[in-house]
Image (cartoon, rainbow, N blue to C red; front, side):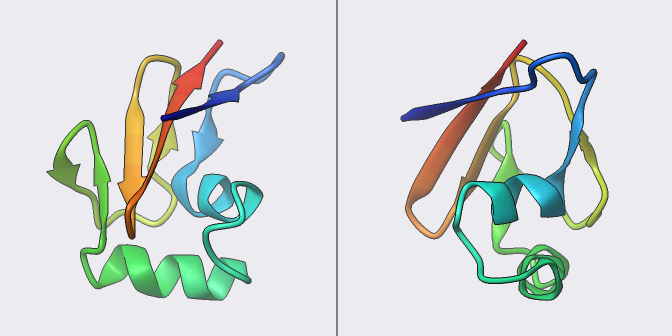
Length: 70
């Protein structure tokens, strides 16, 4: 499982996190995958494209997993 650091930011949008992690080629593709229910946050399906992901949450998509850290 990988980690993603928020740095000085309080959160990261779910669609942006997927793009930054290289899981999708574009923000548009991330939004489609989220809307279709292919992404989970802390084990629950998340369909909000701009869901604010904060430290301590784990995001999973297509066999990939990342835990967000402060």
